Image 1 (tube, rainbow, N blue to C red):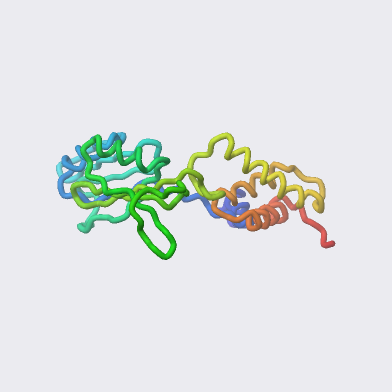
Image 2: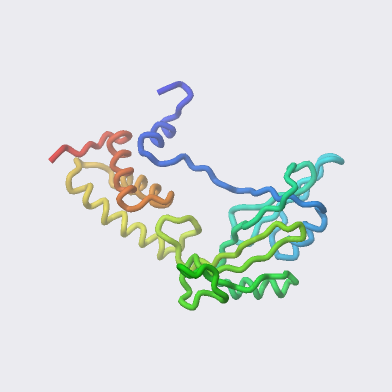
Length: 228
């Protein structure tokens, strides 16, 4: 181990779990800072900062309700001139989200959903399937936002977990740990659980997460399963 590597770094490398990199801010190109600020305030988004350290620089940041990611714009922030397209906002009810924005004076496109072989079909998905219903709008500078309805996330895919979702993941983890425990020497179950759940939340399949947890136990915790 090099002098610059911590034990956490080594554990991360050997378990196969990616180092966390949290995407938190997107910078938008805007021509008129005050106009953009008024637009996003009108959406009901939280104003985090409006900071002007000198006459050439200004930073404005907003965060959508319930979001862990924010937007920034201002003066001296970016050299981009073309508006951004397809910025994604996740909502639980596409119709309610549209109605809220329309009540705030925003020009929102009609809801649509995606059908295999057909592409975009007008209206929200009649089956209320996650990930397939959308509606869009744009800010005064042409930066376009796409709202996507998600009512149930795929396993391990981001977002804030409620108690039931966490219980489901714990149950799944316990079931997969059982196979490891049956052939492994005595060990602390929470070490395997932590590696498995971390991998699942990073998007791994149950099989991939089990393998990552096994590597972590062997390489970091030195719990080695003997060949049959």
